Image (cartoon, rainbow, N blue to C red; front, side):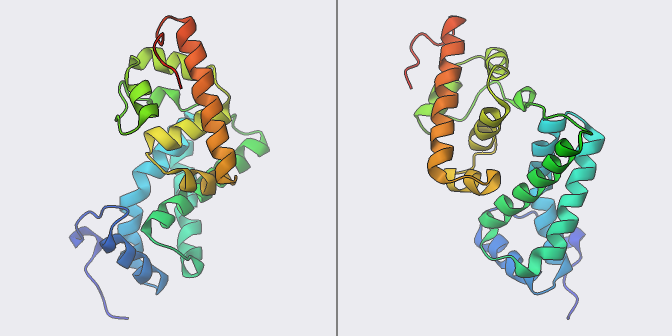
Length: 202
């Protein structure tokens, strides 16, 4: 196999994109540099996802390393686009974390400390979240179940579509939509009780 540009020579790639789709195909064919480019493009997302759950930077780094090692070994059998690749590695990372949870070595943590002060308003749910001050939103999110927090994090922090969230958490799309609806309803009730969401009607 011919030597391609070294990882340091490759420009950053956006996922999803046609260029990233091509990198996926190259990585599947055994191009380690292409996989390295995908690794760099998705590492921060995977790390933040894991750190949000463990609140342990060292553990998140270890789990992220294990995640990409597993992905590198399994990339030959991967089917899909670069968008699917992101969901795939997040699902591997989630499973790595759940294995640690089951072992009793770490407890499930929420992701609320990473919730930004504002959320991009591209649909009614984001507009509703965007009207709430960051600290109020963080406090309210802590009162949701870990599963509800996870869905809202993936949907509104990582900006993933329902289909990708469903693939990551291993549920049907309808179940994820229902969980999101219940989570937003619960969030609205908590915020309304604090006087922060009088006009929020989801």
